[in-house]
Amino acid sequence: MSELDALLEANRTFAAGFDHADLPAPPARRVAVLACMDARLDPARFLGLGIGDAHVIRNAGGRATEDAIRSLIISSWLLGTREFAVVHHTDCGMLTFSNEELRARPRTETGADAWGIDFLPFGNLEESVCEDVRRIRSSPFIPQDIPVRGFLYDVRTGLLNEVQVDRQAAA
Image 1 (cartoon, rainbow, N blue to C red):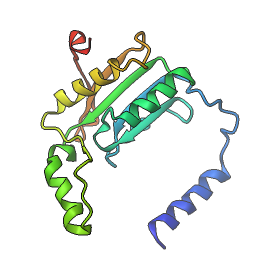
Image 2: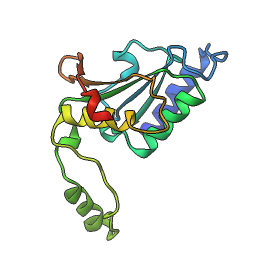
Image 3: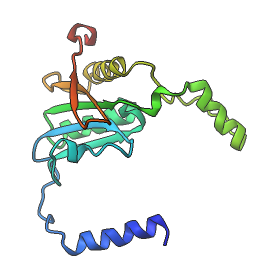
Image 4: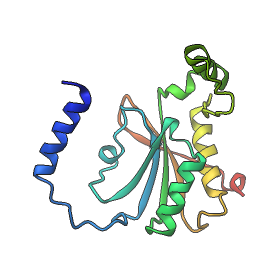
């Protein structure tokens, strides 16, 4: 059985006991979380969230990309979220490569040039959190009254630690 077949079987088991059909689309806790896609992170679990509690947006590095900000705009304007969390983590793979290194791989493997893609690697975890919090705060499409806070998740301990972001730098 392939892994996808195993996932489909697990879904059938989940659906057999599904009792959340009446949940509204807006998240109950009015929060959105932007986190890394790393498989060691389970934001719902480490934040104590249940189905329907929050929007969880994930990508490589938990970066505040144009698409992540698009999702946050929809989350706040159409679905009523009033707080945002940016979560990066220790031992992140985004610390291990440069744009040039990652761009070279598709070129070598497929002949396709990935020169126009910014993979958004970073060299400093805390600064990457600050950069993403600032990017979200500075968007003219994100309401200014929405708090945006940044955190580092420790993959060894499971603890979440807040990163202090200079509010002046966001202006």
